[in-house]
Amino acid sequence: MTDLAYQRCIHPSCGATASLDDTSFQCAACGSLMDVAYDWDRLHPPKNLREFEAKWSRRSEPLEVSGVWRFRELFPFARDEQIMTIGEGQTLTQRSDSVAKFAGMNSGRLFLQYEGMNPSGSFKDNGMTAAFTHARMVGARRAACASTGNTSASLAIYCAATDLMRAVIFIGSGKISYGKLAQALDHGALTVQIAGDFDDALARVQQISKKLGIYLVNSVNPFRLEGQKTIMYRILEALRWEVPDWIVVPGGNLGNTSAFGKAFIELVDLGLIPHAPRLAVINAAGANTFFQLYERQGLRWNGGRLDQGRVDAYMHGMDAANARANTLASAIEINRPVNLPKALRAVDRCGGVVREVTDQEIMDAKAKVAAGGLGCEPASAASVAGAKKLRAEGVIGADERIVCILTGHQLKDPTATVAYHSADPKTFEEVLGTRGIRRANFANRAVQVPNDLDEIIKAIEVYA
Ligand SMILES: *Cc1c(COP(=O)(O)O)cnc(C)c1O
Ligand SMILES: [Zn+2]
Image (cartoon, rainbow, N blue to C red; front, side):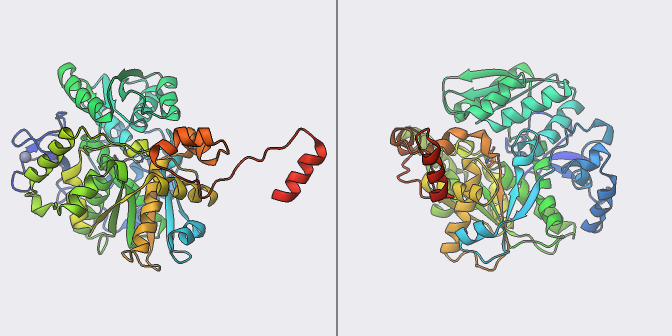
């Protein structure tokens, strides 16, 4: 292998490689997931992460203002002129003492990584810019994904902004939030709604992209994960290159979990950080495959020799019971996480833990995040609900430094938010009661007043 960057099977015992332009995203020898790999001995990785600070003065250049590509020396698979950026990754690492208090942490110890600031409103843009760049490198004319919403919104915006490719989007019926569907339609993506859920749509899109030769941008695509690594670089940068104690992330298809793990493994191997932070992955209780397999059944990465029989048995069990993922947090409503092996590797190398949180805990945490000044969608708040749980268990210490990833913007899913704050029991019941949510513990209800000046003034004096 003479290429500086290539693809490599994730299993050390296989280790089969493929060239950079392979778009099957599957090991030809054993069928496993692929990594993007680098010949670091012949590349020039930075000697110190502080070298990235020099780029702050070059923010007028598109590749340096991108919060993804200014770290491209840490995922050097594309030449500068091949890179497609729309200014993604200019996000915020914000200390939140009110959320810290809610989670039982000491003041100054909890940070929120707000990825809702991306062009399409979710962290997906970090990965999409990298996959889109790869699609361009291989000359793709069409790109497809199955999506619970945010991947399609992201693909649609990159296609619209660059006019290089046609976006083909597969969604399940009924389960997509309006904010996300609005984006796909408004940005002009071909939107195919199939009768079935996300897991069905994902199986179909893989079939169809193979048959028609359409470039696949789902999270089996290892190039997306390369872009998502930069979320961790930005956190380190915001913390002045100090490694936090914990990263807490919602787990759906486990792309972020995998990408974060790979980022830290590489930084440790390159000698750029002394050790990895611990990783806490938070499932919704209604879509808790990773929690079940890792915490309840003891499934481990085991140096790449994971117990596939156990995984298969679990999946077959779900089929037999006709189990469907079910959570209000639609972005993590996934029962068959495609990145499971990579996520196992990540939690293995980062001393990880996996937890599940209920929709009740998610929606209450979401209200607290918003009351603290950052709006997120339900799935994102799983990170904060999970941090609170791990703190209560004593797994996370009150004085440890933790970063919760807020994966998507508040306005992605206004239906759940409005129902949570609504005074109308019928609205509450339809949207939240059916998900097992009993009370909106932190509701901020609209105040009903007659259209009368004195009454209105009286109400304001009472409530504000
Ligand atoms: C996609 C998504 C997730 C799940 O991320 P994975 O990498 O698939 O685990 C969580 N939150 C939001 C808002 C998302 O869009
Ligand atoms: Zn292999």
